[in-house]
Structures are given as C-alpha cells and as structure tokens.
Image (cartoon, rainbow, N blue to C red; front, top):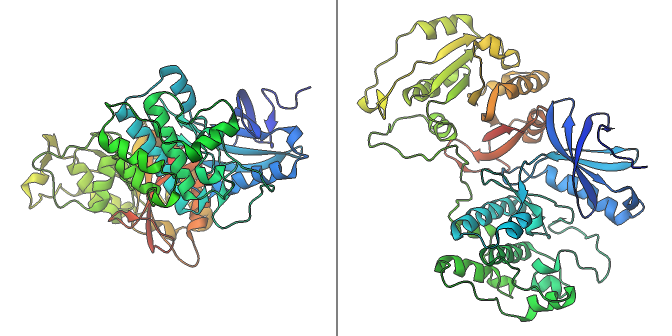
Length: 474
C-alpha cells in the first residue's frame, strides 16, 4: 500500500493535492499549506532511501542550503520536517514547465529567449555562490520556467557548501554526465567554475536543441568534456553570445568567467536588476526630485498602481507616488495626524514638472488611522481589492514588539494583490537581527525577491546598518 496518497496530511499541516514528478532522491507533490492557505511543493524522500545514510544527509542538507538562499530566481524553501520518520521538504510551488521539457518540445530557442533564461539562471547561481553554495547539478531538468518567462533554479540536493567536507564516497562523481565539467570528470572537486561550465553547456543546448557533448555512454560523454572541443554554434548566433559561451566552456576553469555575475551581465541582465511589472520609459519631464523610496516603488508597480504607505514618516514618499499618478493610501497610528494630513491641501511643487507626469493628474494620498500594521485589513482601509505595493519604511518596524512584528507581516500579506510586493526598510540592531527579521516574514508566507544596502540600491551585504528588502507573497 502506498504511504503517500492524495488527501494525506503530511506533518499535520500539508495536504497532498496531486503527484507532480519523481526526483533523484524523492517524489514531488503539489500540496496545500493548511495554516497559511497557499499552494506549496512538497518533496518527500522515498521510504526506501531512509536506510541510506548518505541520501538522508543530502536531503537534510538541501533544506539547510536552500533555506539560506533568498533570490527571486531560486525556488524558495519554506519548511523541513519528518512524517512517520520520512523526511519532507516544503518549497515554493512554481506553476511552470521544466526547461528540459521546453527544449524537447521546441528544439533550439531564439537567442533573445536564451539570453533571458541563461541570464536569470546566472543571477540565481550568483546568489548561491555569494552565499557560499555550489549547486553541482546545473541542468535543464532543474530549471522551471513560468508562462511569464520567469526562471526558477531548483534541486540543490547535491549542492555543497564551499570548504565543507563532502559526502561522496571515494571515486564517486556527482552530477549529470551531459553537464559535467572537465575537472569533475577527472575526479576533482566541483567549484564555482564548475557551475559556470554547466551553465555554458545549457546555453549551448538551448541554442542548438541538442547537448554539445552527448556520446553513446556516460563514460564517453565524460571523456568528451575533457578532450573534445566545443561544437560550433550556428552562424546566425550573435558574436558576443558565442564569445561568453566559449569562455564558459573553456577546459581550464581559470579561463572561465571569474564570477557567474559576469555571465548575467553578458546576457544583458544586471546582477542587481529589479524585477519590474512594466517597461519604464521616462517622459521628457520626468521628476528629478523624487525621494528614493518613490523611485523604487514606481518601477515595481503598474501605471496608476495601488500603493499602501505605512506611517506618516513616509509622507514624502506618499506624496511623490501620488505625484506620479499612483493611487496612494496611507495609515498611521495617530488619529490627529491622519486628520491633519487629510485636511491639508495638496502643496504646489517648486518644480513645475512635478504637477503632472505624462499627463496624469496628481493624486492626493488618502490616510486612515490604524493603531499598528497588525490591525490593517481591507475593511479598515476602506478598499475592496489588494495593493500592488506596500511601503514600510522610516524605522517603524523596530517600534513593535517581536510578537507584533510577526502579526503585522501576517496582516500585510493578504493585503497584497496577486503579484504585489512589500518593500520593507530594516535597521539591524543587537536586539533584532536580520535572521530574526527573515523568520518573521517567512512565517507569514512572504519571501524575499531582492535586497539592497540602503535606498541607493547598493548590493546587500551582511553588515549593512540599513537593508531594503522587497518581499512577495508565495
């Protein structure tokens, strides 16, 4: 009798809805999180692998590695647990198709489509490498592509932390032969450069519709990676694309791009690029004096987007967003402040270009008195539909207790429209560190898409005093 069937409640929380696929170490199910009422992907280790300590340890380490990775091109890990002594991993459910299936169906892809897919894969690998994790199994089967073209890198089951002691047995080589780097084929340890090589193999396959070093047997394929030159790409492939793929596939890892970020840049994607909902084309009279919070939210939402601003200290951002033609609601704990803000006339800007943007009338924010974000509901705000973005800045996060902060994130999550985001300004203190902050929003069903060290959008670093995090509901 099968132990895992539709309708089973795994771990007392996750209801199995349907079987998706069989992976290397476990089966993947679509499930419903009965606590947060959302669809998730459940990876369950096969019962017959429990007796294999190495597999069990790899499964557990996949949970540990991916839990520390936060990037919009990596499938997010939510939870890990045991059900009747069988390990399971709870991950973001991606409604998409595997890249391997896409290539089987379509054959060679257009260069622009390859740039987008490989660029996003490079961004994901860059986030993993920056966190000290080597994937070691980069291949089309471990990449999901949504109908909108968003790429999600998955399956860190044989990933390895840089500098850690491996779980491989003597003489054992992990990874798929078709995407194996020459150094791995020779029995050497995988490095970040090995992931870069595999990315180059995938790029070559996408442009030609076939694997570049595919031979009759796994051993022959591995030898081909060591000895055979890269097969020529079609003559109509842009020269700069051929160049970066050729560099990725260099037999000597020292000659490959030093960092996978370089691959993303070559594909036309900045490694600090913000995923946007629209193409931003500034009109000739684009405002020059907007506060940075407003500039960031403006590119995250559609035109005339619905935006909620938390706290009167973000008043300038609220006013600027209204100036840009967005529909803005504000909430503050003080009823007197809210009355004053709603009664105040719209101030005339000294810059005439701020009066309108692209012919859109300036919108005045509507303010509502709510004791704290934990009490925010659509009814309290007087709105019927969700917000495209929520801005929580100005240090208000630290004024709440730890319990209130968790309640606040749980209240804000359902206020987001589908695809909506929450932009939070986090100030690190000895009493409230980033890992605690991350635990709070993850527990509310929110995951980080991107982070910056301050509003000037520098890449996020571990010791940042101020961190800007873009969250979305998954």
